[in-house]
Length: 175
Image (tube, rainbow, N blue to C red):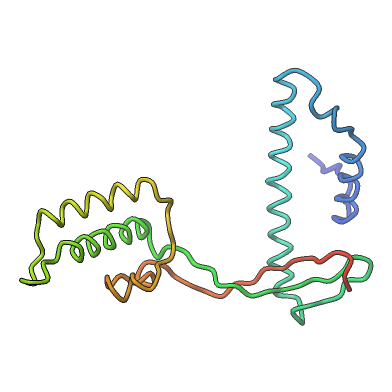
């Protein structure tokens, strides 16, 4: 089996697709049956996924190739590379472990009888139940305020890995 595809220069192929899409009127996209619209949505979703993948390849490669953090690009604008801190959970279940450890630390703090220095089990259980109920309403979090490590002894760095990463943005029209 031979490959009869024409080899396209990527920028030209993207321009061609863009021109084709620009030629379709907004009403043409939404005319048709539910099945036809669903098919368009499916095809569009696949195209968005592929374009996002290609965009990622280009950004990763550009980060490594750029000789400076700002590079003028003739006829387009300027390419800007910026550093940011990326983080992720250290292991599967680290987010849940953080929530559990924090809940236990807060409950113990709330249930502490300052006169005796003992944790009252009934107060601890009530506090723990309240915190866990709040977790059901609070979205997942990936950082803690100062009270986490200072007051409760729970440090986010015990649960997350941090590393420097870069992103590339194209600023159109500015040189």
